Length: 190
Length: 190
Image 1: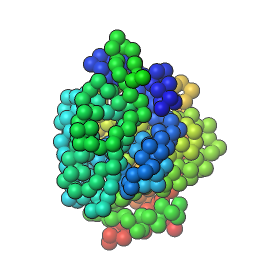
Image 2 (image 1 turned 135 degrees about the vertical axis):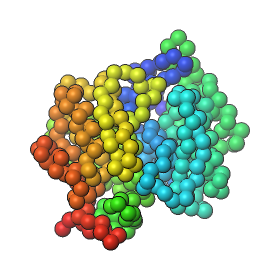
Image 3 (image 1 turned 30 degrees about the horizontal axis):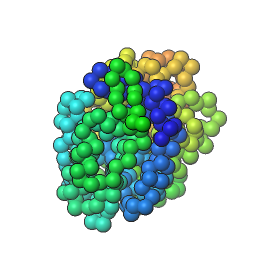
Image 4 (image 1 turned 30 degrees about the vertical axis):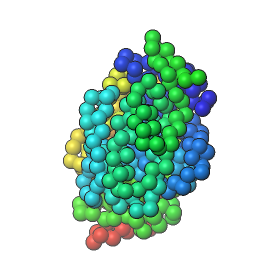
């Protein structure tokens, strides 16, 4: 998606340890109009799939996921990283290790928001080592529902996330694919 | 906003200690189309204000805030409750006590996303005791920028949030105003 690649080129900041900081339009400050374009693109890419619900993980997944939900006219459920007193239902849970933060979080989704016939699309901001997606796939397996695809805003193709997803034969679409962040330069997959 | 009140009446669950659970369309599962209506309503209510940026707090504020940003064509910044290694800039910070979770979180916004001439609208999902709004107002004061208004999806008018805001003479709009949750019943302000 050219609009997105242009924005990454212009505003992305490469940090040590292959971290790409895009907090001027995705992770901290959000450009709602760019996110709506992202959402419309995912709706187009997954138009032939019988999707009933979109799953993501708080917080950075929420903006692209709700815009995809707006474009697809489907509800969004965001997995929570912390329990709160207002969320005491039975939960589906999974552990997610964050390489960036070097911590393990438990993510959870209330069972009542997943129905037996649900057929879901996972949306997330980044795919790197695939830990967040793995966590959602654990929940999807436990809930015994269908996963129709995974839509990623920015993929770091040199990390292992794509391999994890492809071995499960789940359709994967990434709107910007980064081949390398070496020498502080963003190189996209050609 | 009738659409929102109807949805609260239909799906809101009243829990002990005056907690209203609306996690089927706002806090956990999100209805993107309802959120877009919420965003358009805020855009209309604050149409006469010179707003350059929308501020909210992760996570539940993000969906209504980005939809407001989409309707107003303005960027959104969500304050983070946790530091991550990808966010090492100079930060504006404030403490926020959560009565629901009975914990104090530090919220932060990177200084580079607030500019000297910014004039902001605060959007949040709930107004109860006003702690999240107070935290954002602390940051706004520290950053020495203008606040043009506060837009709240659901206000619990029997708690002290409104008084805190009105004493500062900041325009406040709430799309659903709850007068009471006594006996497990949602009563709206007439």
